[in-house]
Structures are given as C-alpha cells and as structure tokens.
Amino acid sequence: MPIYYMMPIFSRTRLMIRNQGLIYCTERSIIKRMKTSPGRPLEFDPDAALTDAMQLFWRKGYENTSMQDLLDAMQLSKSSLYQAFGSKQALFERCMTRYGDFMIGQLRSALDGAPSGVAFIRRFLESVLDEARGDCEARGCLVLNTANEFARRDPRIAAAVAEGLGRFHEVLLTAVQRAQREGDIPSDHDAVTLANYLVSSMSGLKTLSKAGADETSLRGIIRQVLKSLM
Amino acid sequence: MPIYYMMPIFSRTRLMIRNQGLIYCTERSIIKRMKTSPGRPLEFDPDAALTDAMQLFWRKGYENTSMQDLLDAMQLSKSSLYQAFGSKQALFERCMTRYGDFMIGQLRSALDGAPSGVAFIRRFLESVLDEARGDCEARGCLVLNTANEFARRDPRIAAAVAEGLGRFHEVLLTAVQRAQREGDIPSDHDAVTLANYLVSSMSGLKTLSKAGADETSLRGIIRQVLKSLM
DNA sequence: TAAGTAGTGGACCGGATGGTCCATATTTGT
DNA sequence: ACAAATATGGACCATCCGGTCCACTACTTA
Image 1: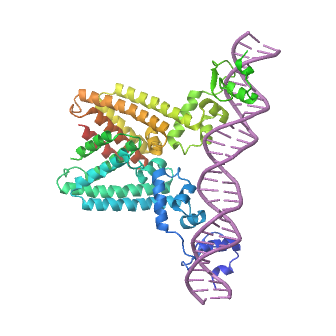
Image 2: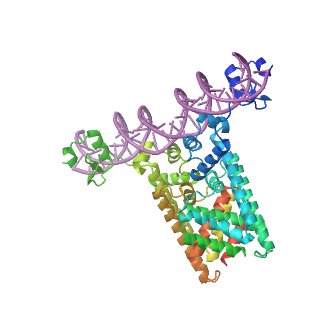
Image 3: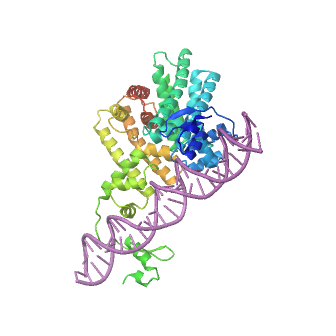
C-alpha cells in the first residue's frame, strides 16, 4: 500500500502532487519519488512545442512574449503548458538550451564542412547580412538578445547566457586554431583572445543590423574584422 | 470674449482642453492655439525629472520599466507626468534625445581634451571596463539597448535609435580623422568604415560586459580592436 | 477680490498579465 | 470492470498595466 495513504495530507494537495510523480509531506520536503506510470498520453509533441516557443522568444524576447503568445504558437492549453514546462521562466531556460544545441550543431557541421578555418569565420560573420538584407526578420541571436535584455539581473538566466556564450566561444576557438594550423592566422596571436574578439564582433554586427544599418556598412565592418585576424 | 464660449462643446471637455492651451471643436480639429497664460506653477523641475526617467530607462529598458517605477523615480503624480510628457512612449523618446545630448556632449569634450585621437579612442573603448569591474551597474548604452529591445518594430523608436547612432558615429569619425592627421592611423584606411567599426566594436563589448565577461577578456578584445586600426 | 489658468492627488478604467484549480477525458494495469 | 495515473479545457484569480478623469488647489492678472 502506497505510503501516502498513511499521511495526514489534505487530499486535494496529495492528489495534485502525486499527479506530478512526487509526494510531499506537509512540510513540502520530498519523501518519495515515483517512477512515471502509465496514464493518458500527451496529445502534443513536447519537442516541437519547445521549438515553437524558442522561435517566439527568439523573435520577441522574454518580457515581450506573453503566455497567450506562447499558447497560440505552441498550440496547447494553459494547463498543458504549465504541466509540461512549469513556468514561463522555466520554459525560457529550456528554450535557451535548445537554442544552444540547435545553433552549435549547425556551426559545428558548417565548420567541419568548410574548406578552411578562415572561410568558416568569414561565412559566420557574413551570416548577419541575411538579416540586414531584409529577406528575413532581424531577430539577432537569442543568447545575445537575452544578455542585453537581462544583463545580470537574474542569476539563472545569467548562467544560461554565460553557458551559451561559452559554447559559441568554443566553436570559434576551434575555427581559429584550425586557421592557425592552416597558416591563415599567425600562430603568435592568442587564439582564445581572437575567439572572444569574434564573439564580440558578431554581437556588435547583430546589434547594428537590428538598428537598421545598411549592408554596405556591415560589409565594411566585416572586412575590418577579418583583416585584424591576419 | 473667448471663442469657446460660443461653441456647443460639452463643458468638461472644453475645460480640459483649454487646460492644455488648446481649443478643439467637436470634430477634434484645432481651431485656435492660445499662448500660455499664467497659472499655478509646476511643483517639480521637468528637466531633473526627465533625467531621472532617462536613468531608469537606461538601467531597465523600456518594457521592463513600468509607469509606477517612473512615478517613484521622478517623484511626481500620474497626472503631472501625463500632463508634462504625454505618454510613456513620448517620455521615452525625449529620454533618448536627452541621452544623446548628454553622452555626445561628454564625448566631444573628452575628444577635445584628449592628447591624441587614438588616446581618445582607447579611453572610449576602455570605458566599458568600469561597468565590467562591477563598481557600477552594467546598464550598457541606452541607444544600443533600445536597438536590441525594439529592433525595427516601432518606426519612431527606430528613427531615434538611428539618430543616436549617427551622432556617436560622427564623434568617432572626427576622432579617426584626427588620428589620421596625427599619423597614428594610416590615411588609406576609410575613416567612415573605421568609425562604423568602432561603433560595432563598442556595441559588442557592451553586450559581453552585460553577459558577465571578465575584465581580462574585455581587455584582450580592446587590444585587438585598437591593433586593427593601425 | 474675482476671473482665468494651470498643476496635483487619487479614484477609476478596461484589459492583459502570469499563474492556479478543478472537473472531466483518456490511457494502462489489475 | 475498476482503480490509478496523467492530460486537457477552461473558469478563475489577484495584480499590474498604461491611461483617463475630476475635484481641488495654487498661482497671476486686472
């Protein structure tokens, strides 16, 4: 017989909490974790829903995205969303991770397929031009947008931002080191500094693009950045 | 006898509108503008209040600053604020202009007092370190923050951002041209491109600083930026 | 002092916000 | 068939949002 039957817990609370696979005693400490048991199956794909949420946060930012927006985009009811993701902020944190996975995966394979480290770096920087040309929305980069929106106001978000930036840095570091091995970037340049520099440059380009800078100006900046690597 | 006495306007409306020095006919078109006449004087300094508002928007961004926050910071009542500034957005636009005047003034006098164009540029870039060191809040730059928050969503705000960036660009262009005259930057570099590049670099540094980058990384990036000018 | 003018505090507004709760529906295990 | 587990739709919540309105107050001029 399950232990919670013996506990003097208000029945509604007990039921709700069992609902999430946990049992709490009245002091709210966890006394037992149940393994997930069968029940009514989800009617939506949590993975696809998460991607939808990510796209929305990416375009509109955290504060400017309302729960209603999310509900519409993810096409699920409020209870389902809260059941599956807990809160707006928790959902956002998962979106940040998802974004990192998504972008880093793309960058890694682009780097692997690139003819040279420098060619990859050039294409990386030039990706900002697509947005500036206006054929797609200037939504920037979710990680950088979040850094700007939150600064260090919330420690959890700050950590997510730092992790995201770290992953970008890592890919760029690999690219710089490869370019050094290939002889395109002098070996006496500090690769870590150059990777930082590239993250910073990309960030500046994204912001200027959002501010409406024209393609010619952005190209000039990119040329300058590339020149300074050599 | 004033014209509005002869107009069949609901008396309350007429009173309110005379209050703002305007008389509207029922179709809401302006039929007469009165010159401001004596009355009860303001109990606050609109200039100081505007500065307070600017500081708040600067720290917290537009969406994340509520009217209540503004009321508290500016220390005036809702009616006074709306009477004096019209709306949150109108107030924000005035804050943007105020910020531009404030910062550009500072930069200009710093440039005038600097021993050389390059010295000014170095100090300009290094100003980001103050925030990163943590002795003051990492609030970034109001213009760049706004570019990131709004992208091109609102045309009026976008125009204000573009104007603000343009003014920064102008000062940096002057600095670059001076440095070229002084022989520190080669004359065959395009000064306009370099000024753009400096705006972009500053933007990147600010974002990274907000994201919590350590001083050493930022110094490395600054060194790289300066090197690329020469 | 009366008339005219303008500023202020605060009540009030409709609507949106993020979040909770519950009755009900749908599944699996016994 | 029935109990247990989970999902879902939607009503509901307090709070806050930007903004309006009005009674009252403070001031200037004639």
